[in-house]
Image (cartoon, rainbow, N blue to C red; front, side, top):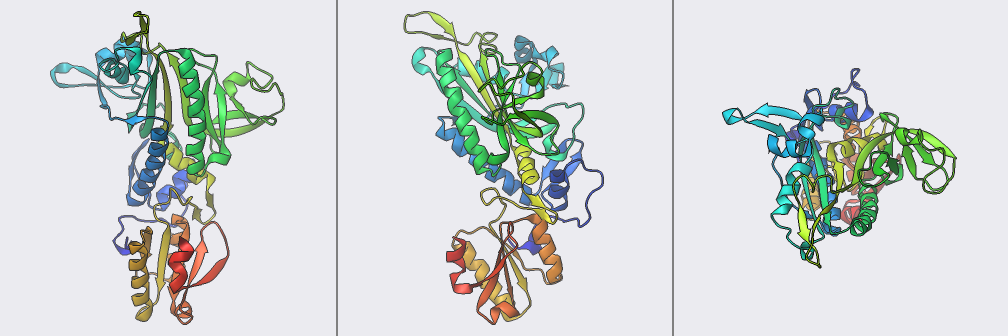
Amino acid sequence: MLQSKLFYKTIKEKSSDVESISHDLLTRAGFIDQLMAGVYSFLPLGFKVLKNIENIIRKNMESAGGQEILMPSLNPKENWEKSGRWTDLDILFKLKGAGDKDIALAATHEEIVSPLVKKVILSYKDLPIYVFQIQNKFRNELRAKSGLLRTREFLMKDLYSFHTSQEDLDKYYDKMIKVYFNVFKELGIGKQTYLTLASGGTFSKYSHEFQMVTDVGEDTIYICQKCKTAVNKEIKAETLACPKCGSNNFEEKKAVEVGNIFKLGTKYSAPFDLKFRDKDGTEKSVIMGCYGIGLGRAMAGIVEAGHDDKGIIWPKDVAPFLVHLISIGEGKVKTTAEKIYQELQKNNIQVLYDDRQDKSAGEKFAEADLIGIPYRVVISEKTLAKNSVELKERSKSAVKLVKIKDLIKTLK
């Protein structure tokens, strides 16, 4: 991508009216744009990051047996009445459709996936089955805040599992805990993310949150110093000792929830009469589980975990580009830079080429640091004299000279 053609705009000054580092940096670096409170546009840089996060999540859900579907955002009132959430869920957006019909904008999809699966599942032979989607959700949050950390419209991955027994659900649930940790590891926030016990389990004592430690977090968690399991503030009021290992040595931290998993049991299968015929011919309710990750919130979490005073530091697997190529000079410098740009593209290395002639070297470097692409490659008259480029990792301070002929091999 030529930077001179990129649809974005950076802002040098730090914003005074934002509540989180990620909100400030993603806005100033041209990744997102706020339309209104809790609602954002993703510009090309931000959309690329979002798609990379999406692909990591999709790969892991498919590895866990998930089949991808896409369900509607517009939902009939009747489905939400059956579950009782038309009146009980205070964040539900409600609107009037044609013929004065009441419609909900989906805040989640249990009310839609249960009757959908009912059309497919008939017997125990059809189970277990796992379906997931990556789709917009709408929640009328009382107070949208901290940029992408709490929004009213957001992209979410939700996977639903359907089982013949509690034992089968428990087995898959434990598997998904491992899958989730792998997702967060690949996103670059694995070390900061803790499996956190929460109250409110529907058919088990606890539900589980995946909480990422960050100073801007609006949740408080207590991390067991022995086994590294965490408990959230509500459950900490109920227990003095760690429910997993019995230790009472906790460290209190601020955190933000980047994922959650629930054992739903028959809470959403029963209202929709979602049953299967068992081996003995009897009809039984399908046992359900659900597993969510907010993509925008994960994106903000990555920035909260990876930044310095100059800007964002993207992990390689989620960065919008791998290489930020910067040309300083004209004539042969520019010609050589264009050749390097083409060579990188031929080798399937994602590259943003700063080809702008009206910016100083200092301006280009400052913007590169703000955007946070993993590798910065600089070509100038000084480096060209040595048939080399300057290569610098965004996460490190050291700069090294690399021969132009060795650049592709070095990056790969």
